[in-house]
Image (cartoon, rainbow, N blue to C red):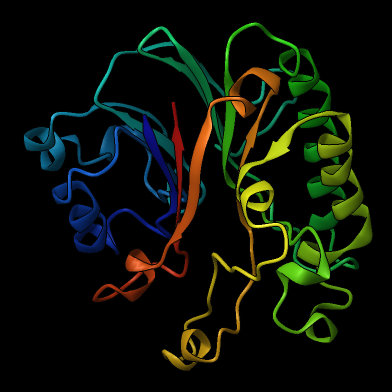
Length: 256
């Protein structure tokens, strides 16, 4: 199974680059974040020809997550179960009765002085409590999405530029590191232990890509069972290089 996670930064604004992903027929499952469209307005009809089952948890103008899968999608949960949230940031499901997938668009938090920062930390702590029950599950569990955390300075092109910024704040990093310390496996980093690889590049022209000035914000985390199934995990630059692109690259996970 090949899974892609991609923050599309508005499914309507970047519909053509997303359609290119679908036309390639490369991925069995696609996790999409930042749809910026509510459920009733999601353009299901545009995707009929590609043969995906689709589950959506949308929100007008902001946030929103969706799962595309060639196989069945069951046991769908919309919204982080133990956290009252007005934002659509979480959808969970079981693909083909075999693999449990959590697709998440975690809060950005702006700066550490922003009132958005405590919300980011509270959401991440609630997420910590929720996923703890899945770490030792007998079923493979994969968490994918835009985590809005650059875990270490090796995940930031210039750490000095991000001092005081929420995505590189020690408090946010420490929460995410707790997940890894408990046993969740960062699929890309475990296969690329010393490599610098970014999944987000700003819109200040292509020079940000040409100069490799980016951030690693997108992840796949695997529980103990899923970690044994990892075959490959690579950054897919093509969505960021498309005509009228999103500001994120894709991240591909292949499991046996």
